[in-house]
Each structure stands twice: as structure tokens, then as C-alpha cells.
Amino acid sequence: MVQEFRAALLRAGASHAVVSRSTLHLGQALDYATRQGYCAHNPARGLRRLRTPHREMRVWTAEQAARFLAVAAEATYSPLWLVALSTGMRLGELRALRWGDLDLERGALAVRRSVDQYGEVNAPKSGKARTIDLDGACVAALHAHRIAQAAWRLQLGTAWADGDLVFASEVGTALVHRNLYRVLVRLQAEAGVPAIRFHDLRHSSASLMLAAGIPIKVVSERLGHASVTITLDIYAHVLPGMGKQAAQTLGRLLSISG
Image (cartoon, rainbow, N blue to C red; front, side, top):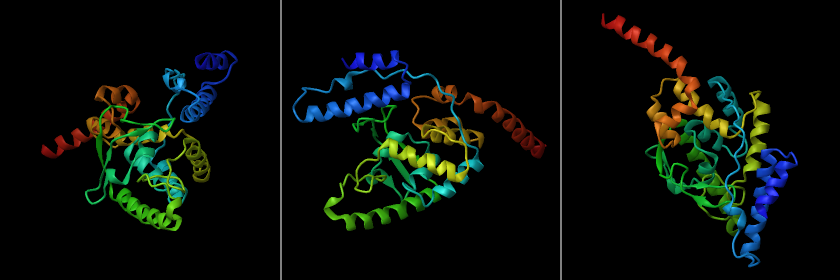
């Protein structure tokens, strides 16, 4: 019945985004029914992921990313935006990040889990945890965020749902994707940068790292790809310009050594 519901929406001409969102809401309703004892299990969880048409990635330049971050610095969910662009983490990984995963003294965080669209906690997409080094700006922003969150927790008292989440709602629960997207749309308009999806923050991070000459192996590890081949397939469009940059750099080195 759930499969037919989804198929009927597609036949009626509904977009893949509408069908996915409708299936998500149905799954949430069935989750509630299961908890209440009306269903033995949630049949929506057995659905295969809907194949969506390929969408060309849109990425920001370094100047556009910096302009966005300047506007987002004091906005809702700060410093999530800085961490997203600096690390290339997936949305589910950011939503699942806990304070226990951070080592701010060393300047690093561990990606150990991800939250799916149903709120279920899973292993990262690659199936294994990874460590990402943080720059000084990220560390400072996270320190300030931790202090502000602790003060807010004290103010709320028992109303705070303590899940140790780094990026949480006003009551400590996991962030909702649609709320993040609404804020992203508003911040992009305020910053005057091209409109992109949340996942394109990850693509922007990767493209900027590669364009800066960071080794693709390092980029692949930060992104949590299962292999460098995946990174090469996704970001091949960035690599041709790197060849020219490499040739010029090597030429300067050989000139100096001569």
C-alpha cells in the first residue's frame, strides 16, 4: 500500500521532492502508530530510496562563501554554517554531532553517526567513523557556541532535552531539515549569493579545497568517501584547472632550482 501510494503520486505528475516529502510524513505518522501499538512495524521503513533525477551541483566561490559566512555569523544555528563549509560534513552528520565527538583542545572532531530523515541514528554513510581537523576560526566559534548553549540550558532547566547535541533546537532536540533550509534561503538572500541546496555547501567545501591545491586524498578523507575514486568522479570538473596550477608551480620550482 505504501509503495502504491508513492507510485500513484509519481503517475499523477508529482515532483520527486514532493513524493519524498509525502513519504517522509507518512513514515512519521506510521512511526507514531507503531509506538502506540496500532502497527507491528513501520512499513515505510522498508521502502527503497527513490531515485531522483541527477541535479547539477552548484557551488560558491571563496568570495561568495566568505560573504555568506559574514552574514550567518550572528544568525540562527550559527556556527553550523561555518562548520558545514569548513568540513564538508553531510547534513545528517551535522545533526547527529555531539559535544563528546569534539576535541577542541586538539582542534578536531569525530564523525561517528548520522541522523536520517526519520530521526533514526545510523553509522556514517561510508560505514566508518572519521576524524576531521578544524581550523582556528571553527574552534573559536564552537567554544563560544558551547558557552552560549550551556547558559541557555541552565535557563530552560528540565525543559531542555539533553542529547548532548552540538547543533540543537531551542529545546535541545535534533534540528529539523526544513527549518534549516528556511534559514539557509533567508541567509543567502541577505548575503546576495547564488541560491544553493544545503548539500551544495558540502560540494562548495570540496571544490574550494581542491581548487586550493589540497591533495585529493586529504579531501576524500575529510568528506568521508569510501574511496578516492568517488571523489574523483564527483569533482572531476575541478581538476582540469588544477593541472594548469600544478604546471605553473612546478615551473617556478624548477626555475628556482636552476
